[in-house]
Image (tube, rainbow, N blue to C red; front, side, top):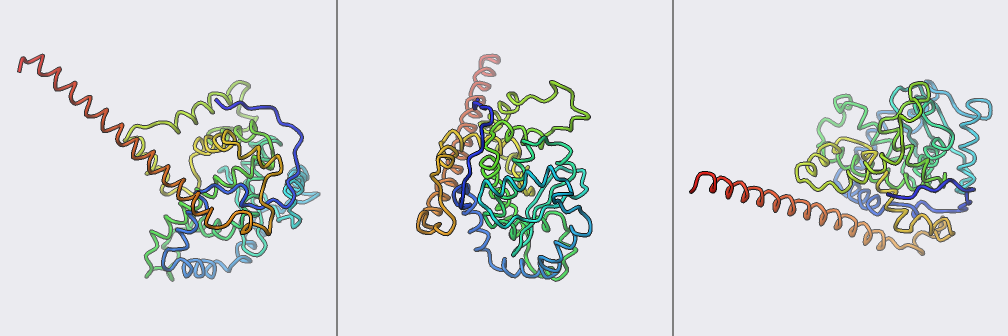
Length: 341
């Protein structure tokens, strides 16, 4: 079980680059996506169909509340604090839209903006909301918003509504977008922790996204962090073959990883020392990414991550096969003894 210390005064991280917190699989998944033939054409046609960045922004301008000093001032204050923590001078526009399903997103291309669903605003306390806003700002700093926008459209809009793409084989493109989207969330989760610098609030955010409720319908004692963290660890180490297959099938069409997976990934990053190194000031500055962390290092780290995932899956399959063979042998011996053959 990861120790969850109380929050301490936040440390400023001026000029921090998104490379500093990127999950190794994030860059690999993005490169795999870009390598698919025709993906650039898909992006161009989808953005053209929806009017580009301005068309998407106009949707929220027309059907959401833009946050500011006099609109949701508490939320605006948290947003300004996060931008200051990361040294991000161009404060992204922030909207709250009426949605009963918990979510948030960073959208746009040249001028990214952040959207918070009203259900998240109702569900989270200030510390948890700071994590969520830092997460979304992490997407902006990392340059995720273009691909996040496409992934969102592909998730929410039926492909039948895009007749200009009818002649294209979209399934591999869609699956690649969703795979990258899931990996990018693991990066942004780290940004959420760095912005808030509150591990307990970060874990509570995952718990509430998984199955929480607001203060009106949650009684004291209904939600407890320790058993949720234990649940996350149990999910991460489950090695049954059938469960491994279901883990893959259950996530193929999701734009976000399972919340317990996200909790476990953040814990592993903290335990490995990545978080503490950044808090100490050991991070890549914006504009120096190539010099401080060459792209070949990203590819090496990404290859190692997917290699480890493959080895883990292969080991799970081998262990499951051994257990199945052992059970079959025991059943055979038991039947042999019972029938005397």
